Each structure stands twice: as structure tokens, then as C-alpha cells.
Image (cartoon, rainbow, N blue to C red; front, side, top):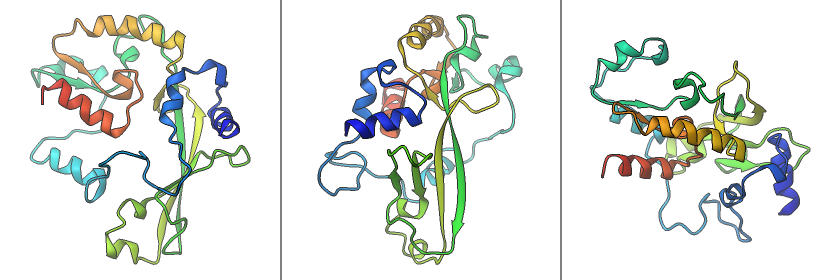
Length: 224
């Protein structure tokens, strides 16, 4: 386990000594065959049709605008609603008042394969250093009870690569080291004074969220 963990961190471009201890808690460890990600949780799963179906229903009869930048026209969008949920970078929102925060990015390589089953599981992680990618995702296994999907003679897989973040890449994961966390606390002080803006998500809160954490945070935010 120790060697595998170090290899994972090296593939992320980080040294073990530079990372906060809580990261270890996010790595599931077990010594029996159980392909559920959160071993020991009583309930776990994803929506029927996956998250696209859930989001479609949540946004039903709602105007959706894509391909725009809120930060380039704040006044226009602020006048559309009493509250704004902002899930972009909090440092960018405040025009990098306390310098930019650090992030990591991912790159995906997608393939369509002429087979009904490539790896038998939705996600297989590859901690060994010889494989440059972090994991392989085979999407049909997210819906194991969808018979028509499972019987298709093709499958789609993605290789996921961790990469250093630059301004031309999409920021995806906050780097919660001591330096960045201290900078974020200054942005958080500014955010707590906002009356209209609700900061959310990994970029808005500068925090790593799994999906169950995201849903719990929504319930907490709106008193549900």
C-alpha cells in the first residue's frame, strides 16, 4: 500500500511530504473483493440514467444559457436573480486579490472499442508508475442493470491522466497545501460578506468534494 500510494502521488506530480494528511482518507483500502467505491457504506449508487438524467430533471422548464462568462458581464446576470450560485474559481471572482490559488487538471483520452465488455468494472485505478494514466473508466458498468446497454457489442472507455494546471487548462482539483489553504481563507473572509453570491463546488469552496459531499452541502446550504 505504501509504494502504491507514493506512485499515485508521483503521477499527480506531488511529493508525499508536501500534501495534507486528509488526502489519505480519500483512498479506499480493503483486502476483500468488493467493487463498491465506499466500502462499508450501507447505501451507495448513482441515479438511473446517470447524472445527466438527474440534471435534466432538475433543470426542467428552466432557461439554460451556455458558452457565456459570468465574470465578463456580472451586472447583467446579477440582475436576473436574487441569489447567484457561483461554482467557478473564487480567486478569479475576486480578481486574484490575494494571488491565484493552485489547482490540478485532468486530461482524458476516449476510445470506442468493438467489444461488449473491456474490463468488467466501471473504474479500475492504476497506481503503478509504469502506466501514465490514473485510471480507466468504462461507462456502461455504471448501469449494470440496463440490459440493452450491457448487451451492446461496443463499449466506450476513457483513460484519465493527471496534469499540472496552467491558465489554458481547466482547473479541476484544488491543491489544499498549507500555502493555498492560507490564501483561500483570505478569499473566504471576502465571500462571507457577500449578500447575493453563494459560492459552491470544488472551485468556489476550494475544497475536494465527492458527490455525496456535494449533495450534503446543498442540503446544508438551503436548510433541507
